[in-house]
Length: 501
Image: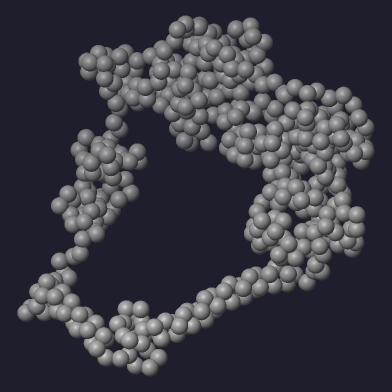
């Protein structure tokens, strides 16, 4: 796959349990189950007479929940024993009939929010039983096979240390390295392979001028480097290894240098590049690949400004064109980009043709104003027809004005009453819609978990559904429809606060 993409993408070799943050960020929500369903796994455990640890829905399973937020959270299945617990983490324990969530004393509210999110993925249709460290139930310990000691410190990850850069010579399976001190980007020669060791990760940088056979051996070079342990740091052979190609360096590699991306885009070998920099006064000469222009474009597309060029644009010494734009689109865009183009907010010149030739727009405005004044005067001089109000009664000057004031008030009252009745009807309809589930309604005090007079024969996982619409809004601060649109973990949090489960 990498060969078909001309070695451009960065490659990574990662072992389970040593995943870097870059790997987890791809998946956002990541769950690791024990065992497997492949034929290779089944054959392996059969040959070695090992028990099948594949996770089953009806079996007991314990998951450690970790992460930094909704975009980076993991649930890792561990051995279902008490010694697998850790005071710095939250856990999910379940079997075929029960689900427990366990929160260590050193966990934060963010950790407890993550466990609710992961619970929606692992056991979405079962009600969990929260357990705090130090107040666990006997059923919880029975599922883990009894109490035992467990750690309280977070699992230590390999810390990143000062980076070391090495040049490499790999021949006949033997690797020879030479460290480069006080290294910079200019030390990376396009004809060679280099290794950057940060202790927690290994980067194998491959230059563009390296032959294809050596490019294929880049991963083997990284593994040999870990085996030889040149820095005597006792690095694990399962340390993540990244294969980085020149010109495609990711940000988590370039952060170890004072990086200039223009230098990695230059053409020629190392000597030619340095010579070009000297000739151009220290400015790198960029490699501009020539590309044939398709016949359908005809080379007639307009040249956009620098500020409007996108990264997907291709260049050639003969012409400049925009990738993906047709000639018709360029012609249309030219009208909008023209400095003399009319502002869209101004009226078009065609509007002038609407008026007759004998009447200018100004005279038409005067005529319309005169007609409006005449109609207004007629309204004052003539009494309005029955049940038809032309002008507001408060404006009309008449001796009967005091008599009309109660009438106007009497007409305003039905309007306000009508609005209030509509509001009441909407509230009634809303309450009816919420109570149309066919379930009996009980007072909130009888539905609480610790109620002295509890209600029987109800679904204890959905106590809130038996509350009336008005009392539900009073307790939860929202309607039932709005409540059920919330995430399940947030619903559970609100119900816990109201002692409804």
